Image (cartoon, rainbow, N blue to C red; front, side, top):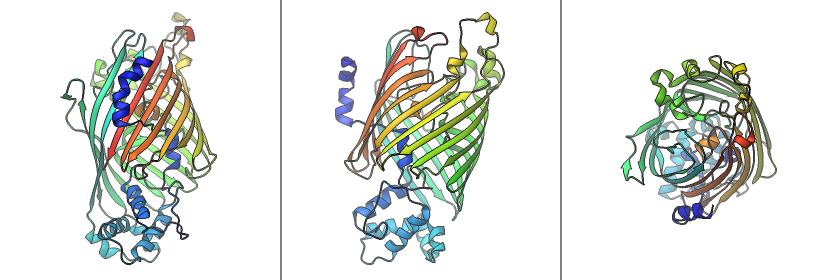
Length: 458
């Protein structure tokens, strides 16, 4: 372990340390405003300049979730404030255009203002990432711009820069066009890993408390806090409700996003095996509350991919439940459980020593404290968790997207995050555990990973 930390020391010292806690999503500052929305930074900047008056008592509780209507009230007061600087006035104008519908319900006219505000908003990041993976008897392979695994009991490192743009186009008071474009470069070989990749491309519509997504959009399963999936779906989604919300999602999932799930990598099986149809129903409570919860059903039709595996059938039926509790604005506990009820072998009698059910469930327990916010210099967070990610159950979870764990791993993970300067956030997390064996724990090879990341947001 000492040698592993010495190898990563330049990345940790030069770039900082960061953790991205899945539980941090429960502490996002604005309810109904998507994570990473430019309004997050804009309001924090206005609050620092004394323009936003918060809840009317001179305070701004940045760690407490607020609704779009409450946000509009803040913006309305800022619009009436005389003598603010040109830069702050520009931010207020953009916020007024963003929350025009809510301001209209308050009787604030913004029709003329909407014509003056640029319809296109650009945001993005430059990211450096270093991951050191140690494993035994591991033959999995992954996307070229993630870790590439080789057979045998060795280790693999990822040393990568990423440049990402996220444009948002305002169509009218209800609809936005949104996208994410990513460009990767490998630092070890000093080569471009790929041309620009359009990860997301979708239309987002809002009608009151109803959200509609159409296209290839980011999908994090809320019923289980991202335990099943945190990856794009190409299709459609409707989310509606207030204190209790429902999400209906249907579309296609591309297995190239997670080639370790359900048998061999897609690249080895051909294009006919790359995608599967997906339908999901989720019901969950308001994530701004002290007590949070969710239940979900996921159906995935894997089709021809099963023909190359030991599994019977063509579909997966998965059920999940999640619970969370915020002890204070800073400290929260989340837990989730996910089970594949369709998992069975083609010929169980021929494989009496194989217990495929060991792959048929997944769970996560995580305790998190605070969280690093890009606009708040010196803010930090930390977490500790135990995760069991059954390979035929968890698809491409939050814990694989934002860390060194993979589907088929189980064990402990700890991490921390820190904001070094405005819009400069570092993360570090460490996982230690085992691959899940279909036989006994004694047959499970050890796995560990050190994950570090530095983000420059703009």
